Image (cartoon, rainbow, N blue to C red; front, side, top):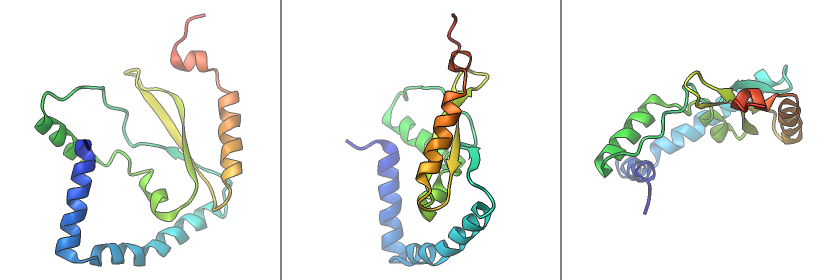
Length: 145
């Protein structure tokens, strides 16, 4: 059984295929080099781009009462585009990784995303490792000694 978000994605894809016969996909592929060049230009002067993984804090885990509520919640979440900071790198192919950096005031997890140049994955891994080794995780997760 597919999750509501997966079903919505498949339905939207099929509607796009039927109505536009691949034109939307073709246009996206034609614009892709422009996005790649823009990120390459920024990364030419930086070793690692550090940015929030999401534009909002994590939602509280709530179990929907019905399948319809789950679909409505997924539609609302898709419209808010909470993952819009990660989507460009799925599109451009730049290496990116997310790692935890703490908690919000509501106690929910917050993370940062590291983005690098093509084939510079080892640098991202070293940067992430250095951050994790220099962080006092007991303070971040609220462990009492």
